[in-house]
Amino acid sequence: MSFDAAQSARTTRPSQLRPASLWSQYRLELPPPATISRRGVAPPTSPSPSPFPRYGHALPVNANASGELFLFGGLARETVKNDVYSISVPDLTATLLHTRGDIPSPRVGHASALVAKVLIIWGGDTRTRQSRPGGKQDNDLYMLNLISREWTCVAVYGPAPVGRYGHAMTVVGSKIYMFGGQVDGVFFNDLWSFDLHSLRKKPTWRLVEPVERYLRPPKRTSHTWITYENRIILFGGADCDRHYSDTWEFDTTAKTWSELNCTGIIPSPREGHSAAIVGHIMYIFGGRGSDGRDLGDLFAFDISDRRWHSLENIGFAPSPRSGHAMASLDTHVLVLGGLCEEQDRHGQDPEDLAVFHEFDTALTYAQFPDVRAYDRFSVASSAYAETLPPYEP
Image (cartoon, helix red, strand yellow):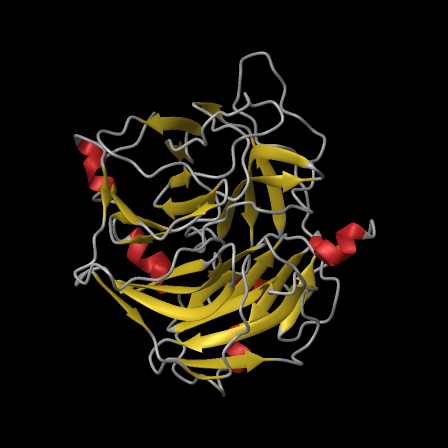
């Protein structure tokens, strides 16, 4: 059931905290954890622990056909996690999923993607207090079969990107594209691809060299990276010297980078923001500015005419934050988790860092009349579901 259908089926939503407007807030219900059944072991009856507040987790920008989002890892209450949650947008529930197999180690600042019924995880800061001093960051590729709930660490052949965090990952067709990030103060602007079809024979990462070798974005971390048709839109991020507010486009067919000459109200430089896409409009929210303060502003970027729009004074927006996640479902943009350093410093734990925020883009159609009520990323990824090799770890 789509989110819109679920909403129309309900005249009231009991977990809604504030009146519906462009922004709405909902408290997620917590069913018991979904265990892997074992003979003689009764399933749990206690509710799942709340996934939030949480920072630096990974959440694919697209939901599955049932309206589920899959969250992995991050920092929750000062503990680095490797747990998996299924968040049902229509039902407003967050269920802890028990998994098995090659479970990835706890991490923060990693990236994920959802293709068909497989959740893909790569990278992140994996050096926790329990890690060996001087150990390398994990650069293995992990895939979770969401039917069997079994993890597999993919045996990759040949060169692979060095382990890192603060990178970004997206899917175009059958390929994962990963860009940027950092490790130990070293920043990257390399671009790698992994063709999921290579799982059939010889799983392989490829370093993507653009046609114009020296035309590419500066090195950075904590940027956003969103698929639109055969292109990927990059915005913002930071290195050790500066924060960025530039917008770039990578054409995966032509293998070319272009820095876009944008008009409108361009967002201020930032890192740690998040992005989602509905039709040809990319939305970004929050992040941390060059002054170290967390931001709570929402912008819309019309990819077709390269124009930025500021969306202000539109209801009960989420509090300023960074390290959160965004996703889209139908015409809705969703914000989950994150951290506000200033509030955290004073020992505050604002309620809206622990709830589910929804922005209804349909109510902005007067500004963007050509926005379509579906997520191109989700459609493009789902088209490959039948062509990928069976994944039954």
